[in-house]
Every structure is written in C-alpha cells, then in structure tokens.
Image (tube, rainbow, N blue to C red; front, side):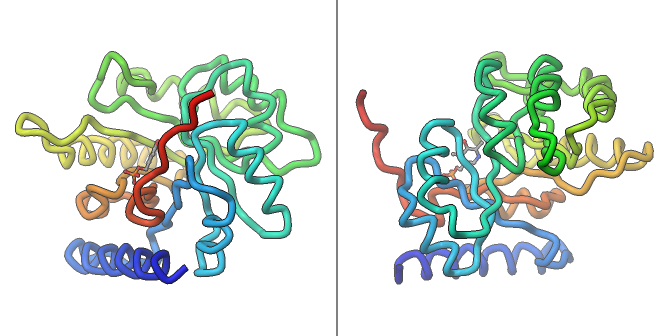
Amino acid sequence: MKDLKAKLDNVRSRIKSACEKAERNASEITVLAVSKRHPATRIRQLHQLGLNAFGENYMQEAIDKQARLTDLELEWHFIGPVQSNKTRELAQHFDWVQSADREKILRRLSAQRPESFPQLNICLQVNIDQEEQKAGILPEDLEEMVDFTLGLPNLRLRGLMAIPRQASAEHDPASSYQRMDELFRSLVSSGISLDTLSMGMSADLDQAIMQGSTMLRIGTDLFGVRPEQKKP
Ligand SMILES: *Cc1c(COP(=O)(O)O)cnc(C)c1O
C-alpha cells in the first residue's frame, strides 16, 4: 500500500507540473488506472487512495476481478481489442469502451446494452499513425464513424482514444498527439459535444497533457511492472 501511495503521489506531481507548463488546470485531467494483469487487491488499494476509474484489456480477467469488487463504486473502462463475439459481455460489464473502431462492434454494443443501464460511454479508437498492425479508425474515416455512432440509441459518444507509434529517433509521439488534438477540436467545432481525449501512458503523460489530453491511461507508473501473463 505504501508503494502504491508513493507511485500515485509521483504521478500526481508529474501531472501537476505538466499542467503548469501547459497552462491547464489539473482538474481537467482524469487518471484511468490500467489494471490489466494486476490483482483485485491492488485495485482495492488504489481505490482507497482515491482512484475510481480502472482500465482492463482482457474480458475474462476483468469480469473475475469485478466480481471481487462489487462492494466498491468503480467505473470500468475496456481498452483492449474488441472481438465481435465479446460485445454482449462488454455491454453488460463495462461503463466505457474506449477501443471501439468498427460499425459492427458499435451496432452490437448498442443493441446488447441492457435496457435498464445508462448509455454505454464510447471513445472511438483512432489509428493515428496509420500503423498496419494496429487497431483503430483511420483519420480520414473518422467523421463517418462519428456520425454512425451518434445514430445509435444506447451509446454515448464521449471522445477519441489513441495509442501512438512508439517513440524512436524517427518518431516523436508529440506529433501524433498533436494530430489527435486537431481531429478532436475539429469535431467539437463542428458542433459535436465531446469531452474526452484519451491519450498518454506512463512514459509520455507529460507530452499528452501538453497536446490536450483529458484522460491519461496509466498502468506501470501506478501499479509497478505488470506480472508475466499466466501460461494456460
Ligand atoms: C497497457 C495499456 C496502457 C498502460 O500502459 P503503461 O505503459 O503500463 O502505463 C494504456 N493504454 C492501453 C490501451 C494499454 O493497453
């Protein structure tokens, strides 16, 4: 618990100084704690320290942990690749899906959202660096997908999500974040009400804040290094 507190304090102070540099208010930034491969006990501890939004990538793992934490008021975000045979469970177990990127997935999520639940919050994932192996909508197809999503009754479009190309000598992720910010702003200025630009992870949260991020997805710098994936 003490280690988690120190890590969280460190993340908070990085956010604070990035916000000062960017002349932004730290209250505009949500921290999504990415808990994939970390046990429910650690989620419980981080919740005690004041976080309530958690991000998961693997359906079964997420559902198992949720079952151990039903006594807490948590907000669950799915941020992993979405398979169309998993949309029903997604619609039943999550508050947000940040990795939606195809009409078929969106249509199913809306149709399968239980009637008694509030609308499912959606971020459209953008493949901002047009990487072949990566999920996400190409920037030129984004407007059409936005319109499609707005037409679905049980979804609430909140914004955009991106995982940019890794930093290297040839690529500075700040440029990807900047292009995301431009896409986001152009949708907002065309009259679409969006409030979430989900970008920035442990390594580059400072840059993401400079470029307008409103939601940081942080795993390693909060929980420590992820345990190895269990072999089946
Ligand atoms: C794992 C993951 C993160 C967190 O990455 P860290 O480098 O551990 O902070 C953020 N976003 C997505 C989509 C992820 O899959």
